Length: 206
Ligand SMILES: [Zn+2]
Picture: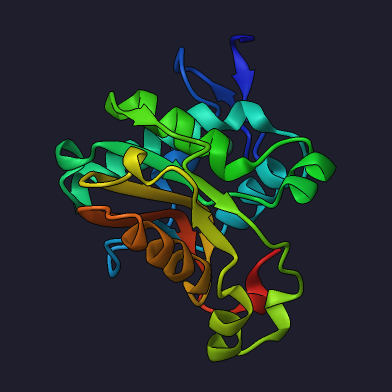
């Protein structure tokens, strides 16, 4: 890791003086904490969209650690992180994952698990169907579209556990609901959904 570095927020460029992380103190202090929700760290407001976009599509996978440190802090504010047994990312369909080269939620979940000292299981929850064009569907249609999209192949890895379910951005929460349902079927004791950011409208999501 190179140090000193420039701040990851596009257009900032300030020097990052901390030995860890990629956000300058000013940008970090200006992050839009989502105080109204227990299941999201941030509202989808500047500079979150630019950061998420760089992380998700721009190959800026080195941001996972920075995001995870902030998420761990948010998690401790909002929920009982100590109760979590296993961290599980929202999976991408294998074709999508191959296309992008990585699953940003998986990177986030793995880094967050390290930050809170818990195990990450990236293969317990699987995406069985490749669902496209969610953005054009209503909330109800999304749930229908996602029916059967997720499954737990080896329920013994989930049964009786408190699962922290991690995604990068949620809008209607339909994906989180579908994943929650699959984890419930596998016998999870409790599912704690948690996203980096929660958007109000799809049109806002880059
Ligand atoms: Zn900055």
